[in-house]
Amino acid sequence: MTSPIERIVYRSDAVALTDGPVDVSPILSTSLRNNARHRLTGALALQGGTFVQVLEGDPEALTGLMETIEADDRHRNLRVLARWPVQVQLFMGWAMVHVDTRALSPHQSRLLTQTGSGAQVTSVLADLASARLGSVARLSSVV
Ligand SMILES: Cc1cc2nc3c(=O)[nH]c(=O)nc-3n(C[C@H](O)[C@H](O)[C@H](O)COP(=O)(O)O)c2cc1C
Image 1: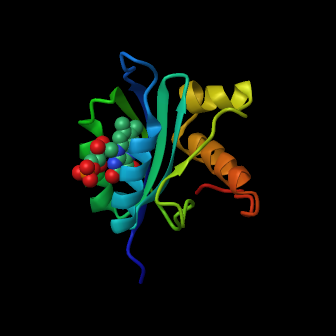
Image 2: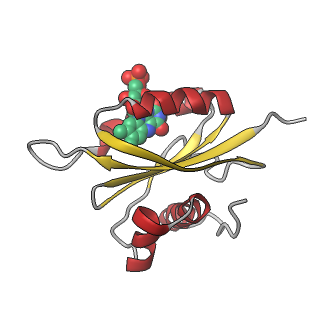
């Protein structure tokens, strides 16, 4: 029997720095280090001042990390869109992939930052992440 895994998706509002936009790189390097240690995987995008993140892995590790992330003053107003059990880690191999949002269509952008459900946001981020890596197979389902 394999241990249960869960996926969580949230949005939050980036807190702008006095000297410019939020710098995602320190968040990414911390995430790579910590998430790999806990076998957590996921994706992070920053689009128009909104952070969107998918995280997946061991439920207890997820809960602990979410408490830490929620207390981070680089963002506020964190809204969890969904949290659900899954069979596989879609972002397997990526302790945290930074999704480049420059090529987003207006529809994808709206899904990510405003209207999308947890599953829709996951799907958009997985598509963008796989496009970025080129050779990764298209992911047709996020369930
Ligand atoms: C939008 C956002 C996403 C984050 N995602 C992660 C993450 O996936 N993993 C992680 O360890 N820290 C993440 N962080 C950083 C944590 O809030 C916290 O600063 C970090 O885990 C502290 O790690 P340290 O104790 O190793 O310095 C994120 C922060 C923000 C603002």
